[in-house]
Length: 503
Image (cartoon, rainbow, N blue to C red; front, side, top):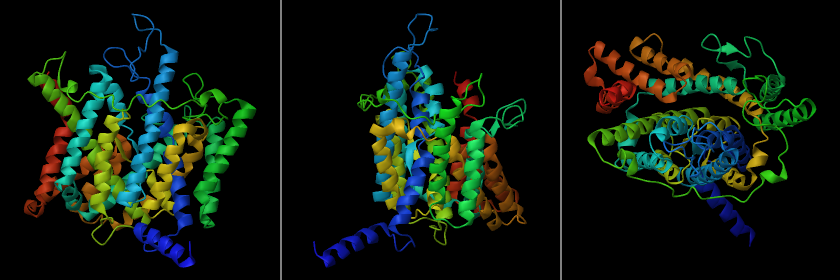
């Protein structure tokens, strides 16, 4: 290859991903992509624990094996559960990898995709106990089909553009607080207690994992203040090494009810050779698209309406989580234009939409955008090439999941805390002297961490915005889609009453 040919190839690569145009470089994209991966990697442990251990209405795991060895369902088949967890881990890594690469190549946006928390919990603890696992994944696939159709018709893009700028800023600020709460919770700094939340264990910071968290946080702040470009990646690496040393010396073990000072999610210990197994892709395509709308094999008005309401709940949560994440990532990286929109918005939303469908078809639950991507953006990611790096790391985890699971949440949480701080700084852009705009922004910001839901915060903000404009006699100024979306959110918040009414 001649020098001129090589220059043209590099130039074409740079032009496609807009690396120079967005003020970045290849090293920054690789570094940012890896930080995003490590910030999201907990999903490789958490999604299998949620989906892989829950039984459906027939007492079967997602693998199709019985969860219990006795008719009374009191003795858990640990071998079957272990196999189920392993199968979910494989499809979780596979889909996260493929879909994140698609986000990079098609959406050209530095945003990671994986099985959505909250959505997977709803599948495991709300939907699956009422039907079979294939039927549960069928409903998730339908959610993906509908959200993709909404995208192709332009509805999803139109809703994004109908959101006023003050609410978009509030969404970003609220997410900053939300991920800070998530980080402190994952590290064990705040927990459920006698009050709504409490500091550490009964109001006291105890245990080696807490020490690792604060040491890593202090190192990160020092490096960040010194403007070290790889500050986040270095802090994660150092925190992980320290955690492995502590676990080897003190045998801390996992956090349990009897041992509240243990490690939160991942154990920072070298994996055994037995943990490296041949990937089992048996969950791919194990889906029943129609069974979720029937009850005992019969399609009735009640069973169909129940199925529709479940799909609607999944749809609304997925729809607006993405709106919030896209805004947050763009705000953090300075990627939004004067209208508050990111580049290639249509392509970004298209990839996110089909991710829900693939998540159902792959039995990994609905895949969606991850707000932890803001950590990678803070570390330098600005383009889709960073997402290609993140996706490639997930694909490697199909075979190397035990290695990635050595990274404890206590070593990653400090990164999310710092990102939350940086996102909170955008609150100065909201005019709190204008109550019409400020009160909806306030509800958006506070409801995200307090309700522990990005979707709930956005919903409260939308409804408050419509009400404030109406009270001020300015209802005609509202975009028609704001009325539609607010009505949908009202149904979403009242779905418990609706479900009770329909039996």
